[in-house]
Amino acid sequence: MNRPTHSIFAMATLVVAMLLSHTVVAGGRLVIDITNRVGPQVLSLDSGSYTNALAQPYTVSMFKYYIGKIALREKNGSEVRSEAYYLVNESEPASKTIVLEHVPIGDYTGISFFTGVDSADNCSGAQDGALDPLNAMFWAWNTGYIFLKLEGRAPASRSSGHLLEYHIGGYREPHNCIRHIALRFKKSLPVVEGGTAHVHLNADVAAVLSGKERIDFAQLSSVTDFHNATTIADNYATMWSVSTEK
Amino acid sequence: MKTARSIMLLALVLVLASFAGSNKYFVITAEDVAFKVPDGFPKPVYDFSSNHPSPEVFILGRKLFYDPILSRDSTISCASCHQRLFAFGHIDHALSHGINGLIGTRNVPPLQNLAWNPAFMWDGGVNHIEMQPLSPLTNPLEMGETLSHILLKLRQNEHYRKDFQAAWHDTVINTERMLKALAQFTGLMISCNSRYDKYIRGADTFSAIEKNGLAFFRQKCATCHTEPLFTNNAYRNNGIRPDTALNDSGRGRITGTMSDNYMFKVPGLRNVERTYPYMHDGRIRNLRSVLDHYADPNQFDTRASPEMRRIGVLSKDQKDALYAFLLTLTDKEFIYDKRFIDPFIDTVK
Image 1 (spheres, rainbow over the protein chains, first blue to last red):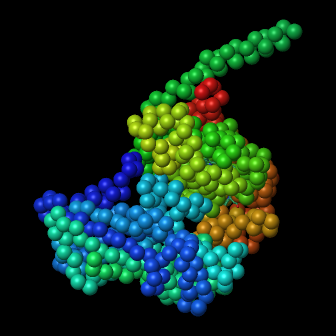
Image 2 (image 1 turned 180 degrees about the vertical axis):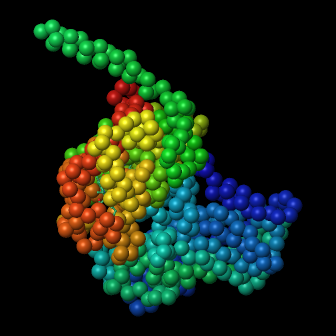
Image 3 (image 1 turned 135 degrees about the horizontal axis):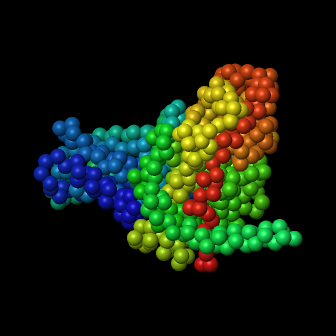
């Protein structure tokens, strides 16, 4: 991958196009909009104040994560998949819309993807685009992508400046933090020739902090290596919900 | 007087001769950078077909390797720590020295045969040769830079703009290309012409003591330091005790597995004569003292890996033979290889 501009995009398009089993048709377009939330509220960096499941107040200053290998499940059970990764960053609104071109026409019943970066893609050397280490989602001393960064402040935190800092990554067992997410649409989603279909994904910060295990800020205000990482990963595995209504 | 004069004359001739040849290393041909697996070496881990060697990419990689512009205050290059004449190690420095005189936490390893390494660093924390430079570049105790600032500096530099253009035929300068150029340069650092190699190929002879040394080595050391790369690429404890000040837990820090604590990557021993001091923290100053360590099982740390028990007590003769053998691993062709000479010493750019 030597051409950086639009390479991710091009790659996604290419792969989806390659997966076309029948006649070569242009297919349709799928627009995925992502809303980062805290429970019922839309996430608002810095200004929003929230409370966790243990009634500890907090604010959020950074929320970014990788999703990749998005696949759509067709009614007949087959799957179309793009190989691309996307870095969703709350502070960069454009990153919250993902467009897949040339999606084969069909009736889709669900979507799946990785939160994180698949182990093979953690081991394949220098990459461009979303996986460029320049995006500061990378550990240099213990090679691997940081899958999710959640930062903020909480009075209960005992870190200096009452900081919260959760940098979660790691592809090796037993500290593997890659989570595969599979979501079903309430109603099947048709992709028609030349048309545009919409999927809306919600990612809930509150779930990152309490999805499976409730994080007590006084006990765990910082995760920056494998210590406790899978606890948060099990939480973020629950952060997703989907709708196909406009 | 007469001898003094002829010595001077000889010196002059040598200097002139070296000038005459000095420009040669700037002419790098496709043949010079072709990757060939040396006789008897296994299949490399690094796939050069994903980073096809070309003179232009190699020359760019060499320039990056020797250029202090990659560090925050433009004082330290890769080559400040990895010095060519010491097989790209750093002699006489137990721990690495970075920007602002900062001292790192580990001994600088030599750079050689990296294309066969499944993992890098003393703890194997880095999983790919292309990703390896990110660690020194961004480590505050080493080069202390950020990737975005490095790219900015390269993009602003007209020479680098030309070099990247020559290497990839367009104007893009990005992380991936910088890393691939460095990987191509370091990946072609191949040591395969030591006296040991020539002996194995039947092109040189060993003295009796060297032959004995090789035999002892195969018996006692080769389970870990496996020929021809002199490493089995595993993580082991060779019986040295943890340094309480550094408290470096080695492999355990990477895997988070208790049983990996205080294990370090088995280093390949090529050019070992020239890479003192030894061990991950440079604690052992010379090769004879390394052999003294291995000779005395009673001194081994309790965590020593089981293979260490096979060594047993080494006699003085055995140590002498091992020493003589280890010296045969020095590869002068590699060390004086012109392709790797600092390009800045001769160019006024």
